[in-house]
Image (cartoon, rainbow, N blue to C red; front, side, top):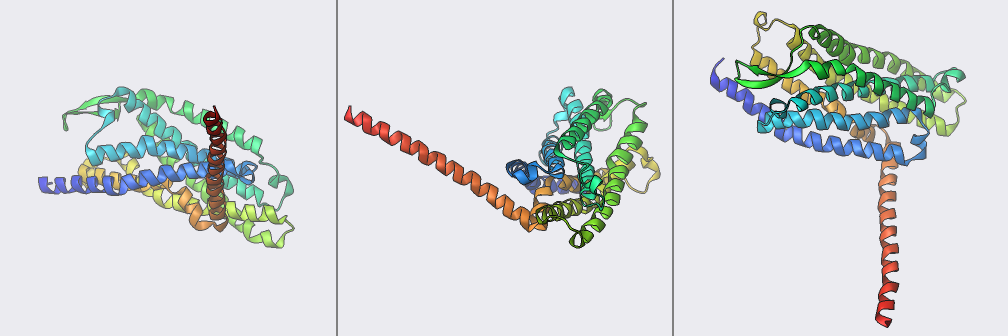
Length: 332
């Protein structure tokens, strides 16, 4: 491939990283923080097991954006690759990416399963998940994925690339390569969570359509409808933005590039583009909830106004406390 075409791919990647990546990163982090504030501020959500799963998901989504998307922006947008200069960051980044991604996927799966059970016809299933069990499930998931990432922490290392004449952060353990390609990328980060989400999401959608014909308290009915619609739209969106990236990544790690009718540069460019789309999964939940749920929009406005009014109240109290002291000093 000619040098001008190579340069074109680099320039396009740079523009995408700067003009799409930076706004995505900023809006994603802000949206994740807003999700956490809303879910933790309202008692309605604090007493909901599904909302607990979404809260933990929001925490790890912010972590995924900071460790993953920010690095991509720096590498492609500004030609600054921290993984080339720091062995620690090379290992930590891949470890953190796995932990945050798998924890986020697990929380979404648990939220979908929770909504399926909460909207079930069977009373025993409706009461199965509670806040205590939700915290325990999240804790177990975090521990499992922290332990799961240890082999990657060991297997990713800096290695000198003869073709580029630069250090590269790559998987250097050939024995771990098959599991990383098939076990992690294809199954844990690809097929398995998508199958769980679609299966239980479809069942939850069927249950929600039957809610108006059942004797369910009005408050719980509205909360179940709200959370189910939020989670189901997120599942559909997640499938659309994650699947292309997982497919390209799997090809990169398993296919014989020489046998393909596509060059390494083109494949890396596709990996970059689908990777940027992939990070929309972690940047968009807040904005999905705002678009899908009128009730969530009202709750968000209520929380923000409550925070603003409490700060104004504190300022007024502080001013009222200062004024008597000033009057006393003048009298002295």
